[in-house]
Amino acid sequence: MNPLAELDSLDIDPVAKSQVAAMFQTLLAQVERDAKTLQAKDLKIEALSHELAHIRRIRFGAKSETLSPLQRDVFEETLDTDLAAIEAEAEQLQDGQPCGTVAKPKRPRAGRQPLPDHLPRVDHHHEPASCTCGHCGKNLVKIGEDVTEQLDVEPAKFFVRRHIRPQYACRACETVTAAPIPPAVIDGGMAAVGLLAWVMVSKYQDHLPLYRLEQIAARDKVILSRSTLADWVGRVGVALQPLAERLKWHLLQGGALHADETPVAQLDPGSGKTRKAYLWAYRSNDLQPGPRLIVFDYQKGRGGEHARQFLGAWKGHLMVDGYAGYKALFTDTGNNGPCTELACFAHARRKFFDLHQANQSPMAWEALQRISVLYAVEAEGKALGIAARQQLRAEKSQPQLHAFHDWLLKTRTVTAPGGASAKALDYTLKRWPALIRYAETGHLPIDNNPVENCIRPIALGKKNWLFAGSERAGQRAAAIQTLLGTAKLNGLNPAAWLKETLEKLPVWPNSRIDELLPLTPEQITAIKQTLPEKATW
View 1 (cartoon, rainbow, N blue to C red):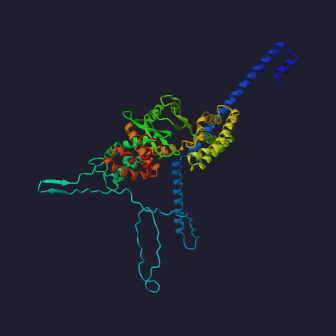
View 2: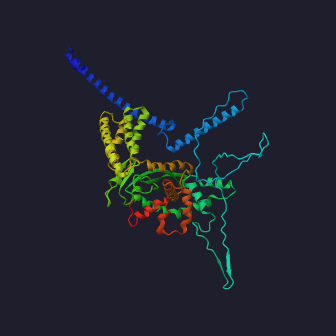
View 3: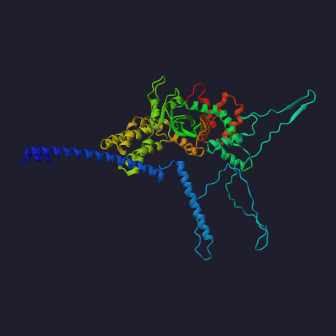
């Protein structure tokens, strides 16, 4: 019904009719404004509800994406510890019950994993108190044995290595001869390479501050002052710097890289406060041949110029998140042209996951299901070669991506702008060309998870050491974490590798520096064969 049309049909005074019409128009305009205001408020409420649910899920939730894997491990181990304590207390209460009460239930036990064969065995023989039978008194005959194995450990065990160099004299020419002093990373230092490796791994991989190492040594009545430990760390860091630079050189020979960054607090001298610095991480592509490499770069800021400075003239595919600082890398038309952007499907998925957790959005659930199909294809092609994986993606991933894109466009047209649903859709649509680029090949990754997994332990470990004392300290930490992180990626024991490397380093020729890198012997052999003059993985 149109009120103004009805008003025209009424037989009333024209002046009054015009006044009433003006009132109707004013009311209609006010209703329209109120409707728009309500719509805007509804969108704001939806956005705030989504944000609140996201924060609550992070704070209190226990879903798979609530916490990082390391954080989940901390909570799970606490839960397991509490359960074990409760069981032990219950067993103690049951053991204290008088005879004739309810029997203690048999505790279910999972099959125990066999202990590693490479560990040394220390045998303890337990013989009966008597070699005669306790019933008839006759001699016992051995018919077999029962072997039970327990895992044991010796904590950091300090001991002294004595280097004895006999001196021999020649009576004829009156000279004295003795073996030369073995070269060491720290000349004249009291620390052997095993102790230096323990300090470096404890500080940079286990994230233990030096004062805690000082306390550990003090329990064995060994005095290791923090100033002495700091001196060792500084000198070993300088000695290892060429190896970190060499790993960076090898990393930049790859055609596709991952990149990410995490904030680090750095002490601001004179102010008594800290300021924000950043630890950048660059990771090799697992879908291409070659060793797995992770290189950290410590910088004072998060600006895109730091990434440009690190990459230099490198040109290739760079997998990054949506941070705007990387954008210049993809638009810079310098001598080597721009890098090619790869967007992370895990980040796109996270937007829909948060939306679904907030309000059980059917649209978000549909997006999650479509993305899960893409990851199922990746799981299927994980063990394939590059050519076979490219064919698999062409047959299965690309049709799914086309259908997903059509669905995104269609869904966006019926979604009100400004809300959390629109933001999730817009995030994916805006990055769509970079998101689907991986499916055109067989060697590009679908997401940025490999580098995030490498940087996450540092993001958690920095809660122990709180801040970097200086920019130089941050750069030293980045270099050492580069070496230890790469060793871990390639299945090496970082402590064993570092100890062996510190033994060889003082007399090792620079021409054979690749042999000292934290890589397997097979990987080092491949380097020698494939990098005679020009480096290409």
